[in-house]
Length: 86
Image 1 (cartoon, rainbow, N blue to C red):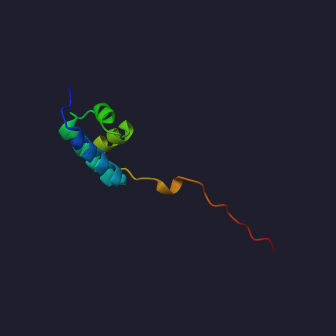
Image 2: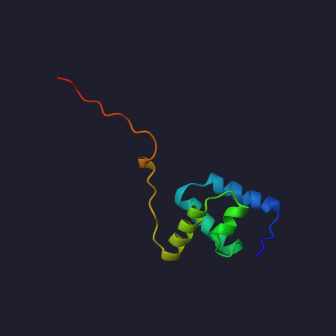
Image 3: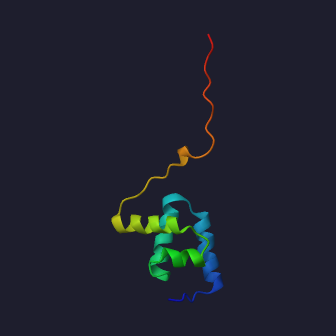
């Protein structure tokens, strides 16, 4: 199936997706995927600049009603533990 959306519409979808984070971003992505992309994360990935894995997770969260937790604290460089010398 071909998507016939104006470039301005796709640009506004992409802009909104990049301004949102976490669960709210996934919710919005799932709604877009269901309404405009026939529940196809691959099609959404090709038209918008989003990760297919994120869209699949969003659709699964919406289908099951179970919200996945983000592990932001596990990312990045960890601080060194300093030990006291006695």
